Length: 449
Image (cartoon, rainbow, N blue to C red; front, side, top):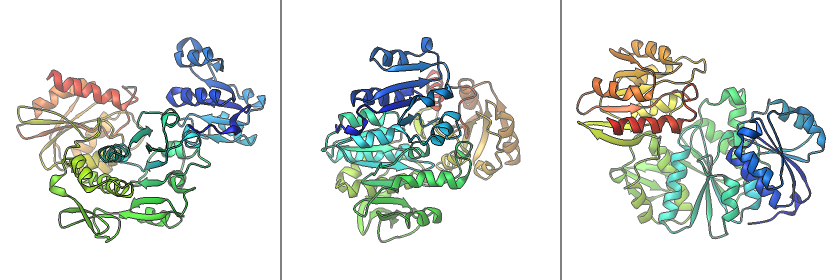
């Protein structure tokens, strides 16, 4: 681990805890900073804050007092989920206090280079695939970021022999000022998180930060089927490689005659890939490009793609009963993700959907419902989804209280050969703390069945 001296004796505020805040506060304390932690959760209900207090770190809990900013902080490390219109962040920027996220801190201490992955959809699958390919190729990868392992914690253990494969959200990328991945990937770009960013342009610019500090010796891998990303790549200093599911590029990653190609080299046959879904071809192509740039052999890539069945909660195969196959796609928290999941199957589908109401309609989902024979809805958006299902001509429409109750109803409405798919098209927060909790409940209900 590198130990940058510029944090020593610096007065730093860590705003918001969760895993990343705890890791950042502890790390900065080790680096000799004077750290104050501020978290909204009361201290009595906040074991993370209590643990930091025991380390000798100053902790202020219960609210975010704006007057705290008058204490002379030289830097703020904020939780990515705190928006920039938060009064504390607005106040800090007005006072010209720099604001970063924990990813920037991880980069500054890491001895290992980074492969960074961002985009609207496919980030986790792509990150996991690259990690598995590098691991199979004996490249000693570590996995980090928005995938559940805190970047600054991983970076403390990394050596120059490792490569950190990191999933990055737009929230995290807004808080960088030197972060420079050796290889950067933007999987795709669609409307998302506009409640946080305000505009599509701000969302795109946040994603573009992944290549902001790259040099001509670095690589940027982007979706060559999206003109917006082609234009974005033209502004990067890095060497650009495109991937495409529809065009024979000749260079980069693409499909030709039933093969995944990298430049003019055949890497793996499509027939040998077990991960379902046309949309996953994007993830596979970008992963292959990153793996090849990292020196992974075709044999190692083939071993991964011929066995990798998906990431948990992302079109995850759960099991089969009486000729019905069950898939958990709880991570599908928007219409686009559910549309892509539905397109992955040719069989009749019984769809389980619903969740947090963000004010949108589901008209955009209607064209994707043509193969859906029945829908079971739940959560705040149940009524809106039912209206979309009626417009799509679906005859069997049932509403239940939650995901657990949806599973046996779905089985009753299904026939041998059908797919039963949880792909909610909505966030989980109206009923469940996370999409992972929602998916785990689905899995448990399937096993009970």
